[in-house]
Amino acid sequence: MNPYFSPNKIEAGCDEAGRGCLAGPVVAAAVILPANHGIEALNDSKQLSEKKRQKLVPLIKEKAIAYGIAFVGQEKIDEINILNASFLAMHCAVDVLKVRPELLLIDGNRFNAYPGIDHECIIKGDTLYQSIAAASILAKEARDDFMRELHIEKPAYNWQKNKGYPTKEHKLALIENGITKHHRKSFKLFAIVE
Image (cartoon, rainbow, N blue to C red):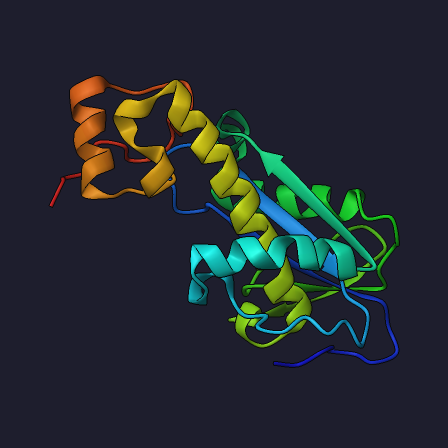
């Protein structure tokens, strides 16, 4: 995995979690890592077990030069659509960085430019660049923690397990219990349960 895209610039890797969910926020993180951070096992969050991600979160936060995590809720997702909400969450994560980056490495193929900072869109960037992988882990775990909290409020949907994704169980719970305030009303919530 590459330590940087451009060796002479301060880079922040950016990624999001929760784009494909039926409920809850989309969460983004931005991470600036030092060259010799020494974090072993950095990888795309989807390639790591929950246990491994949870071990990496405090290490990333400790070793990072700066990191930011931001949430955009379901109301905003419904208002501006999930793609724009994902970009907004990334912008908000960059906003809270204590060090201003000179380049943003974006996981994916599209992005709404952040004012005054260049960016590179990198398909499967979370498997190619360490800072994006670190951002993917922080975003994923922050969102999963949030959904575990929501599960306590609405246990019928089993969000502690499915995290709001459109599993068969989640869709059946929607049919049986209806839509909550946490669901994204602009999504096809009652698509055919296979």
